[in-house]
Length: 254
Image (cartoon, rainbow, N blue to C red; front, side):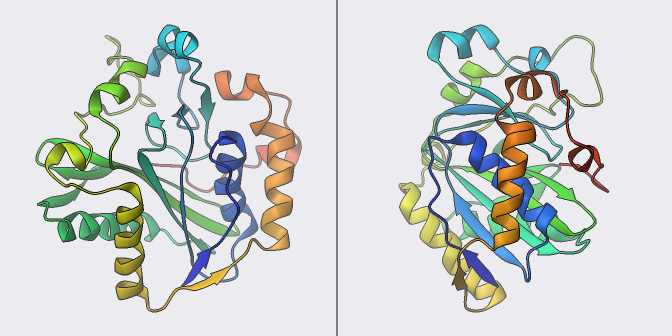
């Protein structure tokens, strides 16, 4: 398996999210792992409505941007106390999300937690420590997960809204969350990253570092121009997109 080495800028959240979609759209030459971080933001699933998911007043007061990603699944809060893990593969790999869930579960177990993979995430008892989502296109597949390491549940909850009284199919499936630190693991983000690398190497063999391909870089630039630099798309999911961006993914679930 390849390990993507890229000069990620945590403060450019839109570029980080565009790269996630670019990995699926470009179709990597071989399976690739990306480990990355985002500065403080809230990220909606592709079909979700911001007003139903996000405490918009709290985000505005604290300067927390609200963004959107191409995969399905629920809304997540991100900051530098959270590790993002992504697996991308060429073609239609519908088992990718299950493989990522197994990887995250094994990492948590290696840290001494009784973790289990559940619906849309990895849980320790009733608390979700990792949320997952996926996207399958004609050329490539993507599964990505957030792993709460040091960010407390109270901070996550401060920027997300409670479940609406009128359930909608696209709504997040809200669960209590907890960081690894809150569950008794005295780990840092750097140590957790090292644990992920070790588990990935155990499962997939040595990780060969590589930079972005030209196709991945080109897709990232196009997606930034057509979606991720456009505020209306993040807030509503709609904008005047070029035909190639509106071509639907085969699946978009989480």
